[in-house]
Amino acid sequence: MINIFEVNETNKMITQENLDVRTITLGISLLDCIDSDLDMLNKKIYRKITDAARELVPTGRAIEREYGIPIVNKRISVTPISLVGGSACRCPEDFVTIARTLDRAAHEVGVNFLGGYSALVSKGMTQADDFLIRSIPQALAETERVCSSVNVGSTKTGIDMDAVRLLGDIILRTAELTKEQDSLGCAKLVVFCNAPDDNPFMAGAFHGVTEGDAVINVGVSGPGVVKHALAEVRGADFETLCETIKKTAFKVTRVGQLVAQEASRRLGVPFGIIDLSLAPTPAVGDSVADILCEIGLEYAGAPGTTAALALLNDQVKKGGVMASSYVGGLSGAFIPVSEDQGMIDAVKAGALSLEKLEAMTCVCSVGLDMIAIPGDTKATTISGIIADEMAIGMVNQKTTAVRIIPVIGKGVGETVEFGGLLGYAPIMPVNQFSCDAFVNRRGRIPAPIHSFKN
Image (cartoon, rainbow, N blue to C red; front, side, top):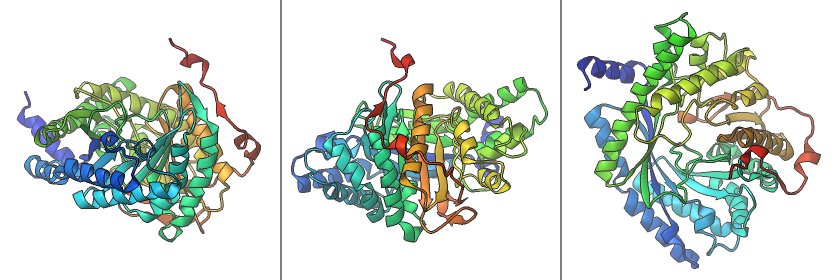
């Protein structure tokens, strides 16, 4: 039973400590839309999305009003479009027409983002995969709400280095085509290793082929709540620290479970998973980096940061998993630079480098996220950064990702403004030594020895 103390405690988390449900994401299968005629395919996609998601935003708003729980985003994820468009698309420009259709559908139903303009190429690329990847710069430049992702590796298959090499060029081209918006298109493109089928967070969400026709996935967030709880036990031992994080994660996840069940019931769509991530925002007091400082670091990036982040991530999972029927997605602590004021402060202070962020990704939910780099960075250097991060995911049997933004016309020390939840970021320096000969090898990096478990 929930008592009045717990009700008041949750109200305080919402009103004073930035607790929110970060997103309700409706996953929609488009496999039944597949058609060899491109015009018919686009009509089927638009009809399927607008019919399935018509009540998503009104339902989210109704739950907000009735329960007093902020639901920041209402989103859609769809089947990877390289699979849906393969029969009809004969060139990259054909795929761009699908991106425009997805954007129109997103506008029609009122969601802020639609994910799934994606390809899964961890072992190799079909012609459709190649066309979709090459279409990404134009697709993201010509749409507002479409998000794209490419899975280039997994623990079971290794890393497709041909795709990694190509994506270095694609990211730079996307940056160039959106340079009037400070290369904002790159903020809507994620490169994955071990991408999950049920991630509700953007820009990497897609509706996996193992999923049903439609499903509700919810992402919760509460860095401010965790920081406030830890401030109450400042100076305590590690056991107390861990117990406090676990109990707080449990309470935060219960809020997400309530919203997920209500959304599922009202929409008549099965409940999929709760993603119990700590996802920061640019708002003061809503920072994962601030939690690390509360644990005992002067800045995120100081010695001990990776250990502190590992502890935080593990305790969030241990507490959250007991609070929900189904936990999935990414689940843990996100460490985006531009979306976390504490991370931005650490970069400005010189405490946090790209290399330290890479080390931190070994123990957190995702990877190198929302990092702005100089616009004149070489494509092969970007590919090398992607390859490093994919290797961490492959060897450690976890999801890793890269969302990196070469800001055309800006260099180290300058700042780029993205706005909204995407925040702002200082341009970070990149290692200038060449990896050209490595990246330009053909083929793939094989799966690690511990992948053989049959």
